[in-house]
Length: 380
Image (cartoon, rainbow, N blue to C red; front, side, top):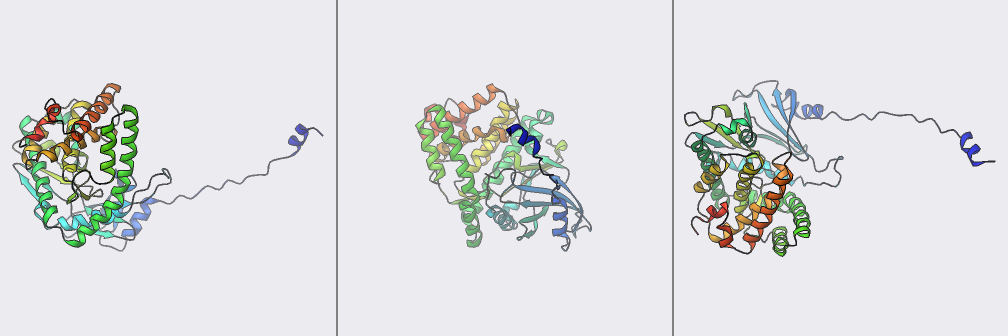
């Protein structure tokens, strides 16, 4: 008997295809709120970041404050689409705790000229579902989107400076509170996130930095990576936002921003909150704004940086060096701030990132004087 004859004679068994019933995430969210005062008639998905599902919910009954919508943020530890990625759920517990902690502090709302900055109210936290119900800021978008579209070109330099000053003033108050007035329970919760979610991020950052070091051969990059990963780069005496950039600042009624009209900003997305060096928040915001000059050709970003730095208390020399190095690292993550960039833009950011890390780690003041970031040493 020939093998071919055998193969022809054997018929494959019939296979019954059963279509998998996928759970409806919208329905699950609606069901989780059904027996609360935040029951919704419908929800609309909005961008929520990695392993988060964020919705705007239309309430079946308005709240006592008149609000008819809420923001619903649900978090997961894993995603079947990216099984290699795990993000600790300590981030949910920490975000709701810090929002509650800030609720009655001076950081809750800061006014600077025509710009006010506030923190969203946390209405309720559903611990079993890892779901937060938050105040909604209507008619808003992110400050990053506003600054990087055509509307941003119309902002005057004085308004850009005022925006930067408002952000610097708010961050100064937040850091002052977080260094001296955080209660023991909140500090402990944030520390859990430092050893949970932030550890996940540090692992990712370490692999990224070592991969870049392999390409450029800089020993200073390896030193910085090791110090960062072990939490020995700077102090650990401040509760930091952890992802402080214009992507996590909402702007209300952005079309009205000018010297005569009031504008409201809201600082959101606190899940990366951890114990660390206060320069981390400074570096992230400065890097974000500076990248807008390279990736989007922004004509106002440098004015915003100048305003931001001028409104924050002067840095001592060591803090300025740490800030420079961390600004450099942030340039490696340009794809978080822009969906695309040219090869020339990427090369410029990568080279500048390596250069700033090396200058910061080696305390190369003369080298830093040749860059825009000399402005960080205004008091040193």
